[in-house]
Structure formats: C-alpha cells, structure tokens
Image 1 (cartoon, helix red, strand yellow):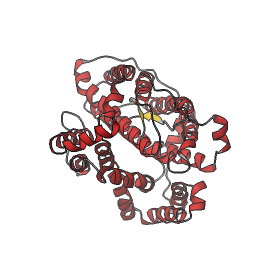
Image 2 (cartoon, helix red, strand yellow; image 1 turned 180 degrees about the vertical axis):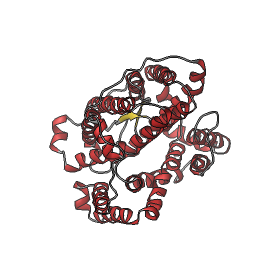
Image 3 (cartoon, rainbow, N blue to C red; image 1 turned 135 degrees about the vertical axis):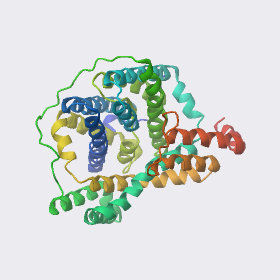
Image 4 (cartoon, rainbow, N blue to C red; image 1 turned 45 degrees about the horizontal axis):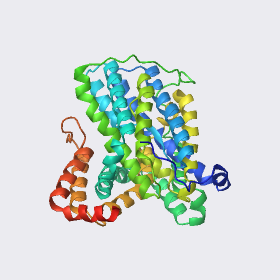
Length: 416
C-alpha cells in the first residue's frame, strides 16, 4: 500500500545545515511559474465561461493553499521534493466543458468522482503497479513532446518582444557560465530579474483590471452528479492527473536521483481532490515543471527543502490570491513565455536523452510524434475527449509491444 520513507533519508537537522540560498531561489522560481501561466489559463477560461471573480479567486486560493500544505507534509515526511497543485490539463478539460455549457456544479461532481477513484488506486497500489510496467523511455518521450512547446516559446518571444527575450536569455546564459554563482543563484532567477527590469523600463507592465480585494474569500461549491458530465469528464480528468501529470512527475523525480512513492502520491491526490473540488478547483496532481525547477541545483538529498519553500511561498500566494494574481497578469505574456522556456530547457534535454538513448526507441518515437500533434495550429488532437499525450503513450506502447518485444524481455531480466 503506502511506501515507507527511505532508510537513508537525511534528518531535518542535517538538511538545515546544508540549506543554501538556491533552495529558496528554486522554490521562488517554481512558485512564480505556478502563479503566472496556470493562473492565466484559469482566469481566461473561467471568465469566458461565466465564473465570477470571487469564484476564480476561490479556485486559485484552495489549489495553492491546500497544494502547499500537501507539499510540505509529504516532502518533510519522505524528504523528497513532492510538489502538489492542481492539474493544468485538467483545468483545460473542465474549462472546455464549462464553455460548452456544462453547469459548474456537474464539473465539481466529476472532480469528486475522480478523487474517489484515485483514493482506491492509491490504497490498492494500482498506479504503482502500472508505473512499474510502463517503459521509462516512452514516458520521457511523452514529456519531451509536452515540454517542446516551452522551447518554442523562447523563439516566439524573440519575435514578439526582442529586448525582454534577449535580456532574459543573456542573464540565464551568463549565470550558467559561472558555476560558482549558479550554485547559489539559479540562472532562471537571474533571467526573471533581467526580464522584469526590461519590462518596467519599456513600459510593458500594465494591470489588466483594478485589484478590488486583498484577502481570498473561498466559495463552497455544492456538487451535482450528471451522467452526461461524468461520462464526458471523469476519464479525461483521471488521465490528465495520472498519465499526464503524476507519471511525468514521478519519472522526472526518478531521473533526478529520487525514489518517489507513487501509491502515497496517488492517495494524496485523491484526498486533495475532495478539498480542491468542493471549493471549485480542478483535481490535485504531482507537478512536473515545478519539481524540475526545485531539482535544478544542489544535492538530491536536500532538494526537499526547495519544495518546502515552494509550499510556504505558494500558501502566501493563496492568502493574497486577488492581489498577486492581478500583479502576475500585469507582466507581458512574452515574459512568461521566455521564462517558462528557459526553465524547461534542462528538462527537455533530459527527456530527449533518456527517451531516445537506449531501448524502446521506436515506441518512444511514435509517442513523441503523436504527442506533438497538440502543437499543430488549428488541429484538434483529442480523441474521445482525451488529449494527444495519453494517446502518444498508448500508440507508443502498442508499437513497442509489436516491434520491440526483446526490450521488454531484457528489462524484465534486469529488474528480476
């Protein structure tokens, strides 16, 4: 059922002795990323779908407040960077349903059903079993396909806002070229500071709307359970958490030298989804991009402190969600693009090297090609309401089972 913490996990006292500025800086960079792009997505879809400013503030508040608490509790218990928040693909799935006229109470009902299924999977060990039988190169190829857009964002940023993109990139490269500085001052933070200075200097910082409230005022949503909404939403939402987010986060953590507990994570996401859903937020998940950021510096043994900083910062964000959300949306979209792109370059590099550098290369290639169809302008890659990354894994696995059976045999022999 639930995994035990590793016997060699560091004591809290040991980690505190090894705390460095970069643990805070990495947590800050991850919190800034979580508090900009994902928030912009929720606000854009929610306002278009008829949710009020107070309801949207409730969404952001509970997603970050409860997510921060889950992060701190699990990270301290396991001494691993286990960052939890709401599912971004799930937000898009629910947003599309809202735009099609589905009552939000029905969407909340779907959130709760997905949470219940994850509770069962966590208690029975079903997700952990599935993860052990999914070839890592296929998941890494899916991650490469999902994160490819972050790299493309950098190129687009140079076209639409050259000076911001140039300042951020020069600061990032300049800091990276000085390893002594980069160990304590993450290059992504240097890029963020440089981009912010240029945004102010070129008068590109503008509040989209007046900030009316300071402290978040959560709204309780009474769920309803519509058969049509459940059939439409439960499977896509479940896949968005398990296949697109949790699997991604677990593989990234393993690639970073950690041994994450999939059953505990799945159970925590299920329990968290009940709290999230009742206050209007999409399901809980283990995040990939934020986890990658807190793992970008220092010994893996002490990186859990970066996750705790993330939790503390994001809880603060949650309490002042109306104010910080307004400020986050005041920066130019280009700045979010280039910072997000630079932050994900190392993850992209790792995904390509692990996805295509050994076994299951044909399956990984198919997975990647299907996943990146999401990036084709005007092309709807969804099949049965489920996004391209999931189908990338399905078709990639099918190809590997047909053409790369020897790789499965070798992998079983190595793990036996």
